[in-house]
Length: 192
Image: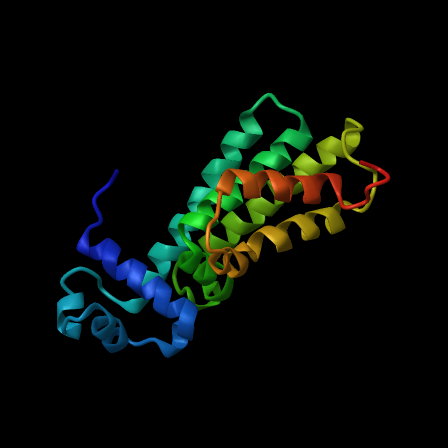
């Protein structure tokens, strides 16, 4: 397991503060205070609050992108791919709920990397849309509005960061399985 560097500690503390107060409300002085150090000491490890936000958001967006690329390359059904997407979201979110808050709520504050982030996000959505469309084409998924299916899946997965911290004990594997059951099979007992 990788040892946490001082820079990692700064980024993780900042992510927590951003989730609690919002990116705009947090100052470098607030961050230094939360870490018990002088604000000037932060600049030995990080250039700016913007750099911290970029680190948080871009690293998570790239992690999702890489995970989806692996899922796309697998020789499995569309349903299994969607189940793997659910697992990907649960695993990343359960390991970084604070960062996920920034990814969802603070991305608009990105400066020079905003276009790159939006491209990653758009490509991710397009790839998931493609998985769903392939499933419809192969008669693995019902022939309903693909945009509604995409919205339903993504809105649930993107909001996991709000729900996961409220659970005393979380088994990511079990949560992935249960979410997949609801998102893929639905809640209608007569159909299941």
